[in-house]
Length: 387
Ligand SMILES: *Cc1c(COP(=O)(O)O)cnc(C)c1O
Image 1 (cartoon, rainbow, N blue to C red):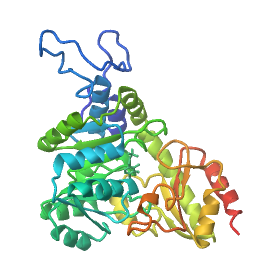
Image 2 (cartoon, rainbow, N blue to C red):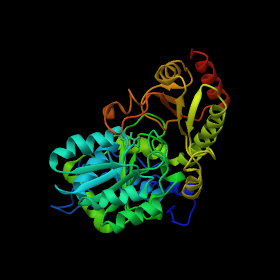
Image 3 (spheres, rainbow, N blue to C red):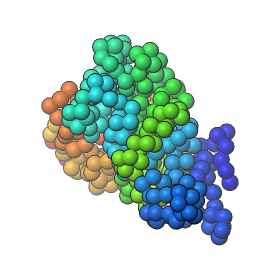
Image 4 (cartoon, helix red, strand yellow):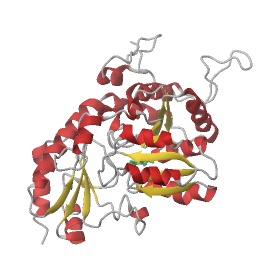
């Protein structure tokens, strides 16, 4: 079947880009590994396919699915989230241009922008994105081309008003880029709220099973799409066919997974809130969270990520991080299995000592889809290890 934009999220997730194969009727479209395509006479291509870096039907199917779910017109699939970000910046920025980004941006994003692209003349100013006056001032102070936000942010779980930020960015003559990795398109569609570009690490919720690394860019403007598509082809950081297939398969179940991730995280966050060892629970689903009302407005649910700060400081946080067994101590997030992370030394080690540094008494939980009683029991036993 072909998919219409009026259909529900889960219908689009299952069917967009997934029409059955016409010759055999195979319900799951075949996986295309071929790196090149036969031509019917010189330059006479079948359906535009010429060479695997430029086009591959399995990658195209994923791109169609991504565009349908993020409410964009064009999507591009990359070999990793950072490859997508690198291509996006090189497609749309030039030396002397500036990025205003969140002061708790994903560490790898900040490393790419500051340490790699900084050398090529791209400037940056980290600010608190939930403070729109600060964003406005930072954007006006430079030749700002991008305002770049993660909401919820990683790992401080701050919520930014996407609609209001789009206005601030556009008034400054900049584009609003939203890294939608934490929310996923099931919980929030930034292009509907005025954002110009959505980027993803599809490694996380979209892939959803911790078995494939990938990234994506989605836009709703043909001119931006053409520039990004050209760089994707010209620099070649494309996803391979097997990666694209695994990502498509994960994406089909995103809605049911996100419902379960969100319900589990809500219950875990409420349990954490009652614990005497805990100094703060950072989860937008809690009424005490400063971004709760805003999150209710722009998100469907509150997602599977929680950060927790301990009264016992670094020692308590490290002890809990190393004492769970259902939660696996590992980087990354968004898979069906629960993961435990100590950002200061793991995911965010690259921003240690900078203004993006993460508090040392903080752990980050990626709540999986296991039975929530088992997640809580695991945390309860880990807490007994705190002195
Ligand atoms: C993981 C992550 C990235 C980077 O993606 P990779 O697939 O690891 O390259 C970017 N942004 C956020 C929010 C992430 O969590």
